[in-house]
Image (cartoon, rainbow, N blue to C red; front, top):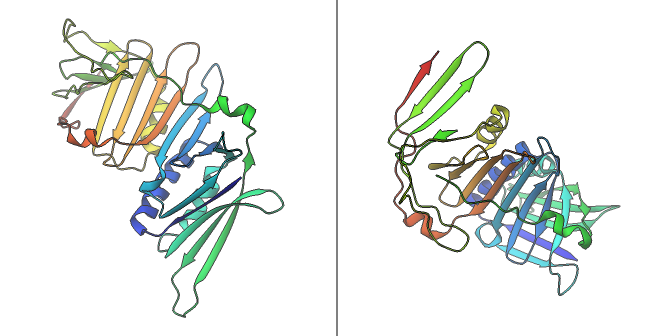
Length: 291
């Protein structure tokens, strides 16, 4: 079981650091799944009330100049590690102006991710700072606990297919409603590749769901991908699904109502087709109602 990778491009390094910083704000511990082509950061808390789930998927070719790994076996060429993302985030903070960063799976009294940061130097020799981050190796019998969660199809906080969305905050003393108008309704592709259609549906009918404001704040305040677009999908009284879009990364947050109350975060590299679509401006002027 081996893993080593290297980042030389400074823009890729800073981008990767921002993603890790976002993950560190969302999860105290997570699973790092390594495959030949991709990295996954996963959190899957099986808690009936308030359990949190996160799914972060990155294509290694978009970040690393060198990437080599050998899994636990030829037929199971993957590695699952448990780590504290805050430790990785702190290590990468020392690499803001680095010449290169190497990440390697090592065994120093315990399994570790060793992050070697090569810093600029006035002399001919390089300065290298190494951070050893303890990790736990997840046995293969537990891998199925960390598979990508399934998400049901969406209908389109309170919104309709006419481009209207209302965000309501209610307490015993005050009720505040923020109205968003003239929003776009981009098509949603299901798992079989078919796009959803509004034909036969009431465009004015509102789909609504209640979510925990703390979880919404955690998603919006924790992201650092600086999105250029934002999408919101709602399954009536069951799911609110947010997607924050960047040219290379999407951050998804879902609040699922019902027996399993989950917060699902996902980052994945966007398909080129996303860039070719014509999206409406998701940030039009808004109005507030106070009661």
